[in-house]
View: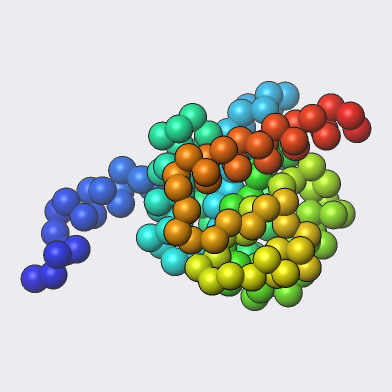
Length: 158
């Protein structure tokens, strides 16, 4: 029997399932529901980021692929302010996220999270910020809050 099998593990994943849902909970005419979309192909960082953001008052949900993320953004009716995506997901999309951001979601901020250095990558992909692992939790949360603030300010200008 491995350490991840059994009742505790499945219960823990079940408790997190509302945060991993790709369906934002929105009420007509109100900006409610997730403000941050986390995109990662690996389940461990996805769960960690979504859990961390939700516990610090930043409503978030997750997506396991770029296609799922774009579908979620389109169904979100403008409730999303920030996308936190792994660089592997962004690289696989080959500019798809950047094009969608420019045309459909001009106020959306993208934060790229990577395990290896590559500042040039973030500049080429038109990301708001680039964060290398390992990083401090407060650094990550401050960056997401700043991205949300700038997105809101820019939307008010438009």
